[in-house]
Image (cartoon, rainbow over all chains, first blue to last red; front, side, top):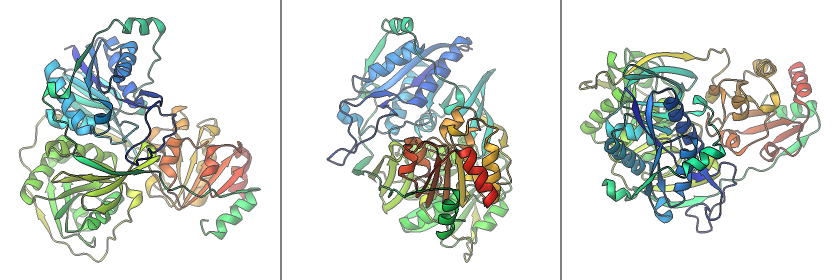
Length: 254
Length: 312
């Protein structure tokens, strides 16, 4: 069996950018800010491309929900080796209110439409930090899930997956079709080479809207407020180890 | 209004984070029920029956639940929910519950609320976004709130004084053959668990090698501390990922956190900045870790740590 794989890739504020809360306190400043592909989704794309290089996968489809700029994220995925892209257009204003549940419904619909046998996404997006899209996509499809994967191996019609859990590792197997969420150590994503970036420009990106897939994106949440976290008061510098130990004794920590 | 807490356990003992989740559940108001699902988990039920403030324990005991696979646990939770119609389903934000609860939420067609740090009202919660660089207060409009709770932000409920009755629930109609548990390899250590330790010592890229972490283990043994690491140290291959403290690793809030050779990247601070006392040892006086440290020592860690070991 040669698989068709759907990979979710989210456009997020670049991990190195300092986050600033918007004056209206309903979100963070995104205008004019550098965005990149969610780092965990890069790992997801890389894994799909590696599976293709091993002839386990026949086609890698990169999906991104978001405004026009989400196409840049898809182009990055295509330059890394994905075969084609699907851009589910969600205007910037609505994107702020798009919840992982909606994205899961979109991915589930696309998996059915494309007859994909595997969905891979990053374990969480570094903007909302929710960590739920893989689990919900699997739930909606009634497929098994392998979350926080650090190693994937295909054996017959199932995947054997090593997962990162609290306190160690766990090995499970899931029957295909399945949903996998990528953890940090699954692989190290490649950099797209210039020839591959050029090639990616010729690859096809299909455009659609959530409504085209019959997905209702009415928010389930109302954002009341977004604020800065409480600042921690800067402490003091100590001269040497003796002073450090003395101070720690004074506050009763040792 | 009523809440179901999904207890996490290893079929022997209840996990500490479940006790934090029970405290959060009590803050929601209304009855609190606990689900203990597993195989041969009588001792867990016994322990939990002593938890104060729990009204009922529901037991789903079946061989089919070996390995706590979400494909099997989710139908169990949904069947119980159908029977009792809870307004809230709550669990600690552990690897296991983070796998399970969103799957349950999707089945109920509700948006899960991950990793809350505060309960403002039964429908309003605070959670951190962007690795703790902003806090979001959100109101859920869903009829059932499916919530995971950050353990370090809620006190653990006491396992004394309660005397809760329990009842068995039927475990039927589980999917067959979707997934299987093969095995676990837990890191063996005599030191306390990272998220439960009163003192945590973490090393960063400045440790230079995995072997040099031995320095931190020696110091940890003097202080009965757990040892963690920054993502940089994990990425460099010094130590395994389950030691990672940070946004993409474990969130810790011990009484004392000692950061050794850690610069203090945003993603690391997100995992430890709620610690009560923070010590930073770094030779770079400009390292951002000093901005959150109560006590900063600008020094070569390879001199300072051995000196600490000697003087403790």
